[in-house]
Length: 196
Image (cartoon, rainbow, N blue to C red; front, side, top):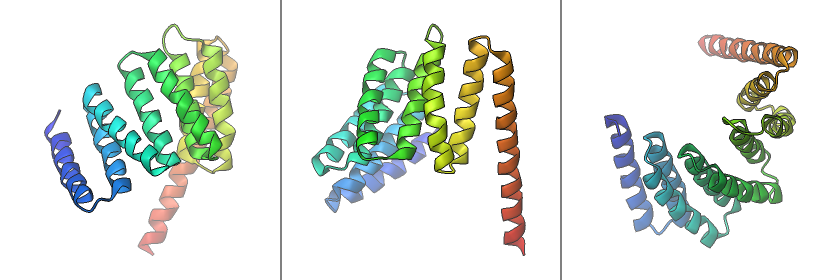
């Protein structure tokens, strides 16, 4: 763990202690997810899982389904990142079910991308990966989630390339580049508007 990650953890621990003192279980759960994410970024699967699982228990106690799905998704990602695809997929499936039940469209798209990502890994079923990515894309488009669209388009292009469909991969890559240009242009306009 680097110095910046340790400082981040120290700050989150201070915040967590405040939420515990105030008996604010929802904010405790949110902070535990943040701590888990920091451990995950540092490559500490056990630290990440310990905090995600604590958050999961609190979300379930509170009946907070969106948070529950987030914790399940992150637990799945921690397992996949550690090489345990089967366990990770089990948690992704649980997260996806909840996200569909509560109609959390952005969460659905994220989890579909994560599941597709597992299938896209070496030795995985690239066509199945593509199906998950293609299910996620229209959701991101509907939400006008350009960041989600760029991730999904990149995943789709890579999947087409992996199954030997270079023309389709190239067409999707062009869409991706056009979207990235659109995002850059919007950012430039926003900066210009702030200066005026």
